[in-house]
Image (cartoon, rainbow, N blue to C red; front, side):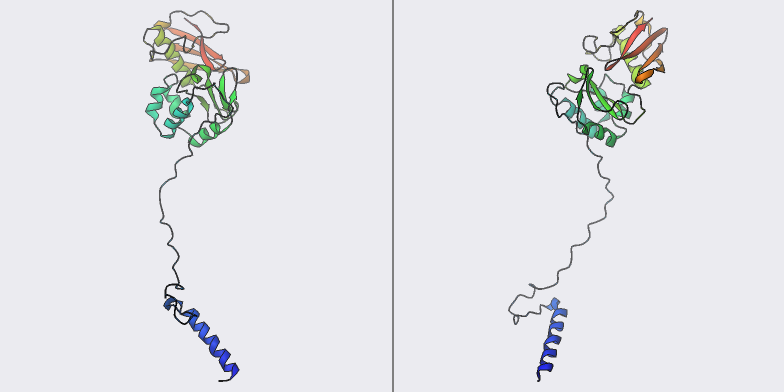
Length: 252
């Protein structure tokens, strides 16, 4: 065999060897295991799943805080909201209207998580996250010292921090206190102030109100302030906003 034919034969053998990897063609004379150079099939594609990813969890940012919040309280609240435990949160957050809780705590998990991702700010009325004129959360001081603080929330720009349902619930608590039947045994004026401190008016006949029939009329004022006229049976109350709270200015 001449040199040219020899080179052709070698080339042909290499091509045949490359095409025959599945049977273990070896360049070392067959001493290697047939599987050492065998072609291995790629792993199968992962199965298609219809599982919906869980919403982003709420984690309350407490960076920079010291003793402003009771230890672990905000985390306990966030854990119950993350778990979707509506009834549990309503039971523990008895200072806040149940209708408000259903919408503001459970209505938009990503928005709520985004609010509490921000760094907290300590102010005159409590601890807050976000911007008051946009998405915002606020824990007033009387809630901050609780082991389960319940925030006030705005989930979108232009939303009132205190809805009519929220105000009606404050009025209900005030009436039930006067009737000797508070919504919770811990609901006292010393623990949770409901009467306005600044420029209060006369407060009388509160027990004449009907806690199950409350109508609220809102009047918006400059700079995001507001006041409400609340009617409950024969009782009329004027309510307003003081730092961190809706309060009763007068009742008759």
